[in-house]
View 1 (tube, helix red, strand yellow):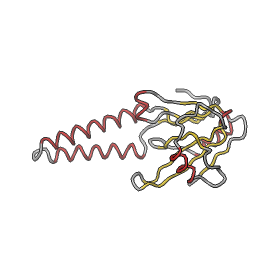
View 2: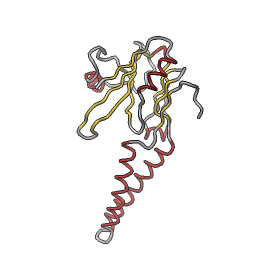
View 3: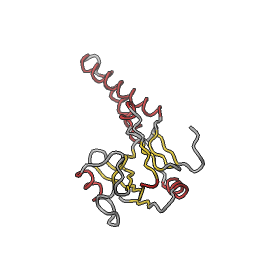
View 4: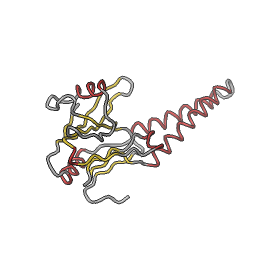
Length: 187
């Protein structure tokens, strides 16, 4: 797809978690073959399950659906990968509704370090993509810097299977945003 000059577009592909998922499924498939003589049921379970998981990972990474885009229309949040299979779920937030873009990282004992990109919308914007529930909103907004008012972020996406390049994001926002749009980097 050709994008206008200055457009920042990121697609899902072969990055971090996706590569790890593919390797894990290959290891499980190998394990299934190692125990094949002892337990045919276990072999079928591990072999078929890991092969199916690997197939899903390969199809999703190879199809490269849209993850995030900054262009003249506004910000486009691509649908989460598994939901993308059923429906793209891409949602464009027009520049007139964007107050700020928030990029932050959380630490989780299961997933480790995970990054997100969120959008603070103008009050009253009713088509907010993926509106957060009260407990999610409070937890996420607690991790943001104090200058970002609690409850201000209404839309977000997990940065998983794609990489956000700060310099390209900042350049595209400067190029396309008609007014001041803050970019906040939180930890």
